[in-house]
Image 1 (cartoon, rainbow, N blue to C red):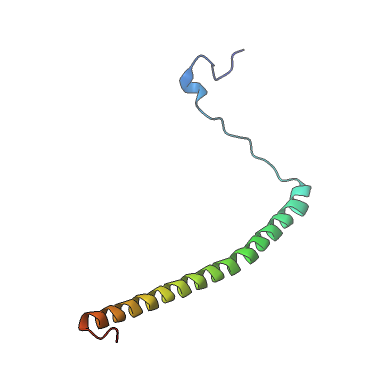
Image 2: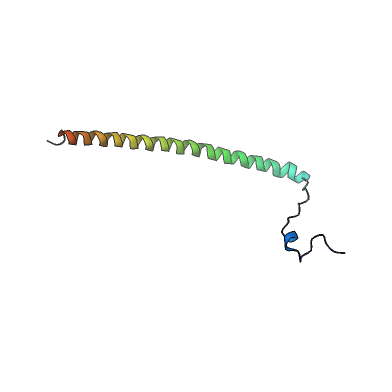
Length: 86
């Protein structure tokens, strides 16, 4: 008896066969699923504060850069008008 996929045919050997469905066992439902949800909650509890801190840090650095740029522009205007220095 020959198999439906002949090894000599390169086109047929490239076709992936569908996997049979995997059924959840009671251990999967009662142990692994709750552990997975707890892990997901743990990751969210870590990720949200990190996102808040990084967003705040970005806003602070951007504000600081704008402030420095404004001070630099104002000092350059004074130098052009001859107001800079004593």
